[in-house]
Length: 148
Length: 148
Image (cartoon, rainbow over all chains, first blue to last red; front, side):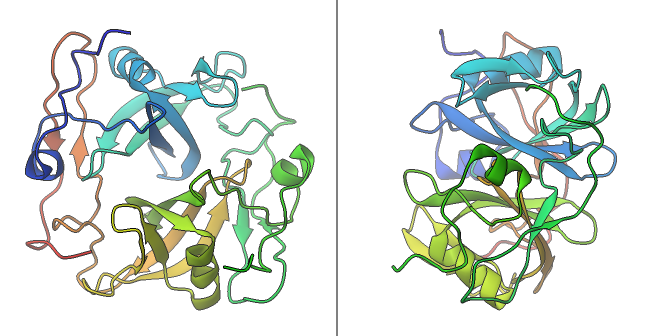
């Protein structure tokens, strides 16, 4: 694709960290990590990736587009599940190499394809160093699951 | 390093997504992405990476350890800045390839080395498709900045 006019080339460290030009860094695979957070509760819903085109589409349309590494394809969140993500705000970090999306979720309000509201439905027990860990399920499913 | 006894080998998709064995996936560089979130407000503070040893240390000690890709070294958050992160909870996602840490921050309460509370202090304007974007600074600095 043609480079998007939305993104400036990477500048000096001061430009990147403390400036106001949008200079997102895409990794060797052309991807930037994205955290989607509920716009109202701040609950972290999912972690995913965007390439430049998915990010440009998200900025232009206000609907979250991702890049699926496993399927090697664009993925407008909710197209098959109804769990759309209307983007209320996009934040970028100091290094400009990670994004946070504050979203309002459509459909049944979930984000996880196996039926939980958040993909982060399990906690890791702490304190041990010498044994295999058993995760704890922290919430209940809201559905039987969806396709992505 | 010796594989940590904390981590089970990756299992079937059902084991990974819907089970209770802890099977974190480290990428080709041996890293897993980590989102640190304020344990009280759910504000996303930073995005970073752990390798297996950093994750094992975090689980064992309850203090957040990361792996710095730029410095290729372990990094106990707060060692130089005082901005320690006491981990209240660790969550893992359905794919078991991303972590969320709910943390209480020491020192001045910030996480960003250039002086903001959160690294995600800038928002990206939405709606445009044809022009370079100017970020908006959403919060004020709480200090003049720190080393990592």
